[in-house]
Length: 419
Image (cartoon, rainbow, N blue to C red):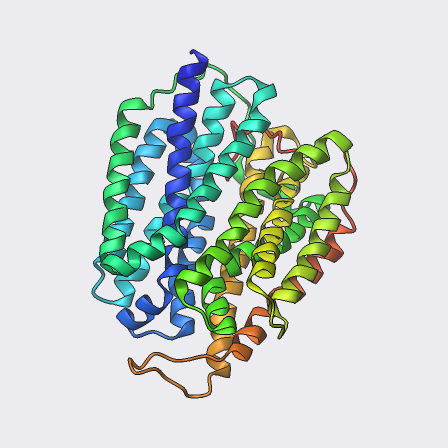
């Protein structure tokens, strides 16, 4: 296969990764619209947003097995279709339960995106190019996150949340058509001895290093999950008395930072062989930065852009946790190790998203808008979002037990990875 064809395959699969990012983040931009449409409070909105993360986590290992059995092409075509159908159900849902089912389907379909890209990179590119391509893939994903922000916000103002999602369905159909005619991956003739899933998970659960990396990765990802994916826009609007169109670009800077950080931190760490130091320093910086964001300070807009960029940048150190965990176990179970970590990170992230909503409702003082939607004051948001700080402290404590290893980059055996 020529390099040109290989890059075409990678590009198309990466567009799926971008697309699912837009779908996953869309509720954070539509918060007020969705709360009004389904007559829900903060807890209900948190459940609507986090259920996609839950299904994303639960389906990683099953979808990895599907891709191994039926190939990347079928995996992308089937689960991109699941994403599109889930988005259509969400857009046309007559009640909250149907909307939740649609979001569940979006999460399930999204779980196939990154593992599909990983398999293409592993099968079609030489080893020395793979780390760079994974960094570029993460960059593509953050472009999706950015397009789930401000552009989606403008579209929302023009056509409303339901029609906005239906337009995303049409975009998905275009991508599905392109994928159908361009994805043609040769079958691999290599056969690897595989450990059973149960035995693999047993080995991982008994490995102290895996738990150390997992607890640290949870803290590093948490800011992206809680602020970027769901609550950041609403908090900034309330804290600074600004409109949604002004708040979205500020939160979007997290994804710009993540794009830069996930490539820069891993690249420098690889050259210096100081992954542990980068992980600890990044965790400390995230704890400081999030404390500044949550604290009752009146920061200028320019400072907010910088703060959220830096939060995203240091969150990029999470990639070092995944590669470190895979180095701590046999290469034959590196994929399941990655799936275990990613699933745990996402499940905890979804739980904290829900926790913020529950705390907001517990602190609610009875105020409602003209449309009957609950109004939460800025101090309620600050207390609820403070749930992230103890998790970061735990992550920092965990990171102190990481063992320094050289060349700790995302140089995994992604032929088996289940991200």
